[in-house]
Length: 272
Ligand SMILES: Nc1ncnc2c1ncn2[C@@H]1O[C@H](COP(=O)(O)OP(=O)(O)OP(=O)(O)O)[C@@H](O)[C@H]1O
Image: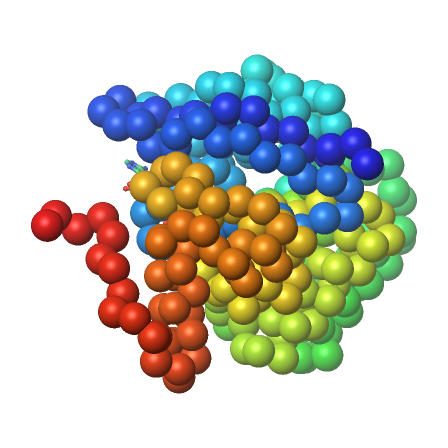
């Protein structure tokens, strides 16, 4: 099957540092790619580079073609047309991504108003469907609620509803399950899976949670200091990791789950 996202030698530099070393990977329609690595390894930078939202002073080069459209050379105007419709992102920090002065129902409806020609009543119905699918109505959250009246996990679900509104081809989800309890996390992953299976949506899922990646991602990319140390099918990378860093991440993840690692963990990124 043809790649939906084809990334070739994508690099990111800040004024002083190389933040991402050349990365190459593909994601096919309907597929979830997990991106993992310790804090500061460059996961969010990769997500922001694809969205065209890098901080001032950062520069991306290389190639990143989404359905044949080269993302890195698009003008801000063309990127704006793509974002929300073809390419969507759920941010790590929901409070800064939501508008504190607008009710959540209005914010979800805004996405439809901006990118579709649906009538007011269709937008109202679609907005309610999304609130239902993200279990917000069930939790007693009204579409008239403002972001500050919601818990972190509920705000995260509003962002997910906004991201899924226009059935994007590619969803970039940066640690979006962190604030969710296990039951809600599973329900949200099921919702993503549903969009992957029914609309062919692909997902680039940034997460520290190796269990989540193992369960839901077909492929995984392991980052360390901005470089890819290992990538491949999740089962082969996790069952037979070839790099010591991946082995250490897996051991730490087992340790966190209450099982002691068999060998002492190597220390990464620390002066010796
Ligand atoms: N706005 C910024 N200004 C300067 N350096 C930055 C900025 N954002 C990120 N960096 C640097 O880029 C590198 C990668 O950071 P990034 O946020 O992409 O890592 P991450 O893997 O997403 O971390 P985390 O898991 O903690 O979110 C780090 O060295 C970080 O210090």
